[in-house]
Length: 107
Length: 203
Image 1 (cartoon, rainbow over the protein chains, first blue to last red):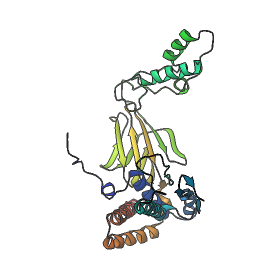
Image 2: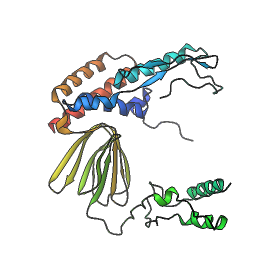
Image 3: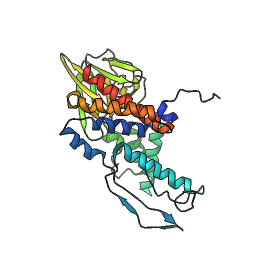
Image 4: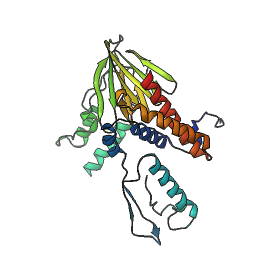
C-alpha cells in the first residue's frame, strides 16, 4: 500500500477537475481569436442550464439561467453557487447522505 | 424472453478479453466483421430466426499491426464540434505533450499522451499545418494510427497577438494578487495558456 505521493498538477491540488481545467483553457484560447472567428467560437461557449431548489420532496420553480453565464467566469460562478448551496447545510438543496434526494444542479 | 437471451449472450461475449480493446498493445489480427460467437450461440437457441446484427458486426475491424513499419502515419484529429483531420496519411505529427513536444513517426510505440496548450504540427512532405491546441489527448496505436482529441484547436494564423499580450499582462497581474488556491490556479492557467499562445505566434 503506497502513500499518495504522486505529483498532482497544480490545478488538481487546488480542487479543479481535468474537465474544468480543459474548459478554462479552451475558453481562454477562444478569447484570443481574431474576428470573425471569435464570434463564431463564442456560440460554442454558451451554457444553458436551469437551477431549481427542492423543498420537502417537491421541486420549486426552476430559475432559468440565461446563456450569458458562459466561459471561465460562468464556471467559477456555478462552482460558487454549488458551494453556497452545499455549505448552507439546509436539507432543501443539499443532497443528504441517504442519497435519495436528487441533486438539483447537474453538471 | 428471447430478447433477454440475446442481451445476456451479448454481455457474455463483451466480457471475453478479445482484441476489441482499443488500448491492447499486443499484435492482433484483423477481426471479421461478423460476431461469430454470438451467431453460433443464437443458432443454438433459435435456429429458425435470423440473428440480429450486433454492434460488433457493424463496427469496422481494427486495422492490424503490420509486420514491417509502414511508410505513413494515419492521423485522426477531432474536436467536439468537428473532425479536423480524418484518416489522413502523413509523414509525421508533433504533438505538444505535457512532457514536451513529441514527434510521432510511423512505427511509433503505442502511447497515450496528455496534451498541454501548444502547437500541433502535421508534416506531409514539405507542407506543415500548424494548429494551436488548448488541451486534449493523443493516442498513438501500434498500427501507426494516431488519434488526437482536443477541446479547442485553431490554426495559428487565427490568433490575435494584441489580445494575447493583453491576456498575458492581465493574468500575470492576477497571479500576483491572487489569494485563494483556486484563484492562484486559475491565474496560473491563464499565464500558461497565454505564454503558449505567445510562443506559438513568435515561434
